Structures are given as structure tokens and as C-alpha cells.
Length: 587
Image 1: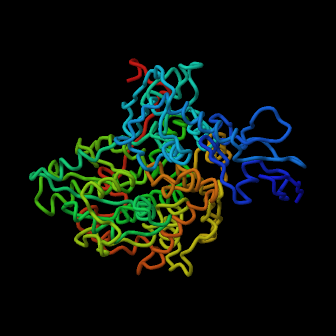
Image 2 (image 1 turned 60 degrees about the horizontal axis):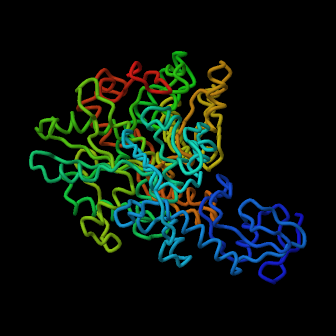
Image 3 (image 1 turned 90 degrees about the vertical axis):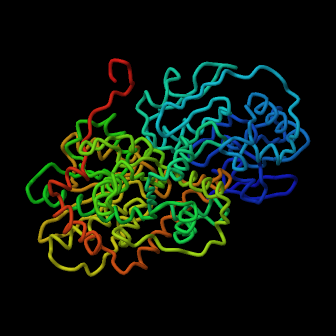
């Protein structure tokens, strides 16, 4: 390791030679503020909040992208530096809407925190504000340019994580804004609605489209039976909304809170994850055994599905026809549950608590059997946190409670791990392997499929035949595999694809991890959340989806068998190519 000797605030240090000034000063315990900087994503120096003074240089330099050199003499908090940072923050605030009290990011806003740390109490700079663009047309994401600080994080996140580049700077000078091409709505371009741009926005310029008040209206409608389901990843993040450590598993407290809010039934989407494995596993077995279209691509991630319909519609035959778990559950609640409880399906109001903004778009897809929506409302993990606070519930002191056990209360460890990258494939293999070999698995842990590598793969010997599987998360990582399929060169039989890096534990609706934390811990917060799910998997009596007794009863009493005609009507869907840019002619 090559090192250089430098001075920081008149004290000598030896640091790695490939570091930036910001990295070096933070490593020795000195906190230089930053706003646009995000480790491995954005280090453009656009905000100029991280400036430092270097002896011998006329101008201050942005520490996030300025490399250290031998003998460098750095001042991080000189009078000149502090005054510059304060002026920069004041300039940013001068063109900011400043409706902090009503902003969705109030008390979790990096600009608000920075202004407090820099002791900026008044903004002396006055002038016209940039013209606002408010885009509320998309089902999942809202864009409000009056709050945008032009940091560029969202642009780089979309480009580097998803390989799409939906966002960019538009116009010049005072008229500069960030948005899709020609300042179109997110609804009119090839946006995945994944929400990864929301997760890196330091302010409230990007946010999920809130549905809290629609849910409250349903809860107060005496004609509605309001059923809530919670995705596995939510339990690993919700505690963060109440200042609990990252990855704290709060399953029991979450259930207790939902009951206090007034939901008629509180179920776990893990039940439907087990159901998904029964359908998707059967689909794979049929294709594998009958030389059908392979590789089979999973369909649980609506962000990935939107990407596929825009970018790879020719691969629709490869994609599983299975709905995602929460959509399957909605369909079952409005058919089997309604029938068993003698309720009109139109009076069953289904609320999904999801880690994902793309689920808001997914719920708009109509069930072609019932001509109703399977799910009526989707709340993100963040929205659930706000809903719990709105109802005045002291979350941290709640006693743990269990999900409702009638009809849909059972779930296996396989259902739990759906929330992390590799979990769907691992769950599928636990069932598919046992069905094909007719032998119990000695070890249900497929360790090769775990972790945060962009692509993970495994080869299994099933009855003398090698079955090759792969796991991929984020579209930038998925693209090479998709190109292989398109070229007819894929070596795989079964591929899990998740739209978000890390899977659902890092979904676009999860608790936002502040950049100051992300810049220190990197991606390890995803691992911590994932471990919360793997730990719960270990506690379950049954860890394979086909062992779920209530799933077996569902097939006996209603669906008959996996892949049946009834199952296809309710639990499967179809896809169609989408134009990259929506026009009146394409609607």
C-alpha cells in the first residue's frame, strides 16, 4: 500500500495515496460536511459544501474529488473555509422552497441538518425563485423541482445502478432543473419506478406518492373489510423510522401497531411468497421437464418487470407469468377469503405494506378475471412509519403480537427470505429440488446465492442433470445476462432478477439511510437488513414453501393444484411491450 505524508490542521498524518482529501480527513476523525457526495455514486463537487483550503493554492478546492499528494497542507475549518461553506448553504437555501414543516423529509433532510450544523439561521440573499415543476402523474414517484438542489445524486444513481439514465440536467444557468428528457413526467418515459433515485435524494425533491389518507378513509368506511399485508423486508427496516438501529427486526411491534390502527385482518405477505413458490416452482418444473422456454426469469420485482417491458419485450416468453406475492394475496383475499367469509369482493379493501415504490404502479394492473384491482393501496415502509406516528402510537414500547392465524397465518422460512437478493431463488430451489428428486434436502441453505455480488450462480445435480441458476440484482448487473438470453447464449435454466441493489431490503420505499452513514458503512446496511431475514428463517419450524399446511389447504379447498385453471386465472398475469416515450398515439 502506497502512502503519502500530509498535514491536516497543522498535524502530520500518513494516509493512503489513492484517497481523496475528503476520505483522508474523515479517516483521521475530522468531519467535513458534504451534500452532493455519495460514495461510489457521486463525487462531482457540484455543491461546493466540502471545500477545504490547501496551502499554496489560490482557490478553495472540493475535497470529495481532489486527490491527496505528498506534503499537502490542508486546513479544513479555517475562517475562509467556514465563511465559504456558509455562503454556499445560504445560496442553496435562497432558491429552495423552504416549506420544511410540511415537507416529507422534515427532520430527515440533509440540507436542513447542514444548515443547522453551519449555524445558518437567516438567509440574507433574496431573489426570484426558479420556476417549479411538480410531477405527480406517475403512480409511484413525485418530483418537485422547487426543492431540488441540483446535487446530481439521482442522475448518477439511475445511471450507475440501473444503467438507464432516465434523469439529467435540463436547461442552463438559473433555469437548470433535473428531470426526464424534455422535462417529461416519470409516467411518460421508460422509468422503472424503482425509487432508487428517491433513496439518494438529500431533500424532498423526490418522494413516493403517498396513499395514507386513502387508507384512513377505508378504515373509517363501515362497509369495508380492510385487510393489511406486510412484505418480509419491511420488518427489517421499519424500526429505523423510530430511530432504532439499522436491521432491527420489529415484526411483532409492527403487527401490534397495525391492529391499534384498526385493520380488520393483519397478515404476512410471506404466506403469499410460499404460494408464489408453489406456482413459479411448478412453472419451472414444467418448462424444464418439457423443454419449454428457458431460462425462466422470476417476476416478483415490478421494477424489473417494467424495465423488461420497455427494454427487453422480446424476452416476455422467458418471464414467469406468476404475479408477485402481494398481488397473489390480493387476488386470494378477494376470491377465496371473500367467499369463505360471505363478503362481497368489492367490500374487501386490501392494503399492502411494501418496501417498494414500483408496487404502487404494479397495483394499477387490473385482474382480468374479476376486472378489479387485486390490491387497493400500497404504503411504503416510510409511509407506514408516518401512519403509526399519525395515530399517536408509541412504537418502541409495544408488546409483540402475532399475525392473524385464520386461513393465511402460516408462513415458512422460505417466504421470509424473499426480501433479499437470492432469497426467491433459494426458496424456489428448496421446493423444486425436493419435488424433482423426491428426497428431503439435507441442507436447505444455498449459501452460494447469498451476498451482494452483482451476479451469483450455482449448479445443482438433480437426478443426474445439471441445473444452472443465477441471481442478479439491479438492471446494470442484469443487462449482460439479458443480452446473453437475447443472443441465445445463456448457460442458465433459472434466473432470479431483482430491480433494486440488495433486493427488497434496499427497495425504493425503505427507510432512507442518510448519506453520512452510507459514506461510512457502504453497502453493509443492506447486509444487516438481510441478516434480519435470514435469522428469522432459522427460527421457523418449516423452511420450505411446500410444507406450509395452510397453502396445502388452499389448494385442497380452492385452487385444486399448482398451475390449475383456477390458479392461472387468479395468480398469473401477462405482459406487453411498452413504448419508451409515451405519446397520445401510444396510449
